[in-house]
Amino acid sequence: AQTVTQSQPEMSVQEAETVTLSCTYDTSESDYYLFWYKQPPSRQMILVIRQEAYKQQNATENRFSVNFQKAAKSFSLKISDSQLGDAAMYFCAYRSAEDTDKLIFGTGTRLQVFP
Amino acid sequence: DTGVSQNPRHKITKRGQNVTFRCDPISEHNRLYWYRQTLGQGPEFLTYFQNEAQLEKSRLLSDRFSAERPKGSFSTLEIQRTEQGDSAMYLCASSPWDSYNEQFFGPGTRLTVL
Image (cartoon, rainbow over all chains, first blue to last red; front, side, top):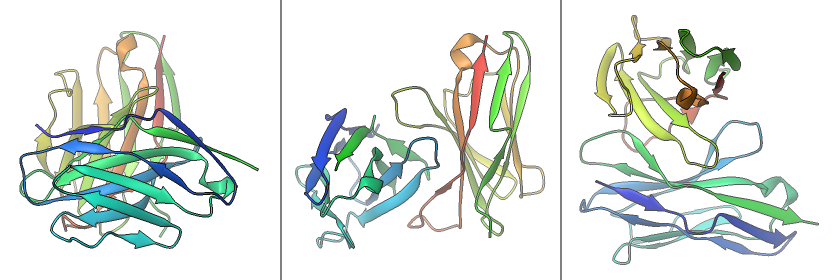
C-alpha cells in the first residue's frame, strides 16, 4: 500500500522569504501523480501544484515549485516570496496512475507567515 | 460554475441517530469522491463514483455507512447509528474522468456526535 509522510507538523516563514515543505512517499508503482493541496483555515482545499512521475522536469506554478526526486521518493514544495495569504495547512498527496483513483494524503504541515 | 457544494455545513447529532449529507459536484464532472478528515490529520478516502457506479469503497466505510449517487449527479452519504468516533469533517470532491485531473473539493460537512 502507498503511504505519504509529512514530517514537519508546523513551519513558519517571514513574509517575502522562501520556505520548503517536505514530503516523502512509498510506492512500488512506477506511474503516479503527486500533488500539493492548500487548506486555508475554515476554507476548502485547493490544488497548489501537481507533478507526473514520468516527467523529470520539476513543476512550477508562479511562486510555487517542487523538487521531485523519484529515486528518493521525495516531493518537496518551495514557496518563494511568501505572502500572508500563504498561511494554511499544506497536504502532500499521491494518486496512482495504474489503478485506483483515490488520493492518499499526508498528515499535513501548518504554515505560518509572519509580517 | 459554483464549485462543489455540500450540505449541511455543520451537523450536531446524538449518538445512535442517523445522519445524511449531500454533495453537489461541479456539473459535468462524472467522478465524485468522499473523504473523511479528523482533527490534525489529512483526509482519508472513503469511496468514489463514476457516474452512478460506486467503483471503490475503503475499509473505513463500515456497514453503518452508505453512499449513493442515483442519477450520476449529486451524492448522499448516510451514517446510521452514529458513534462519537464518527465526529469528523466529511469532504466531497469531484473531477472529470482523467486520472491527471485534479479533484475539486467542497467546503465539507462537520459532524459532531454527542
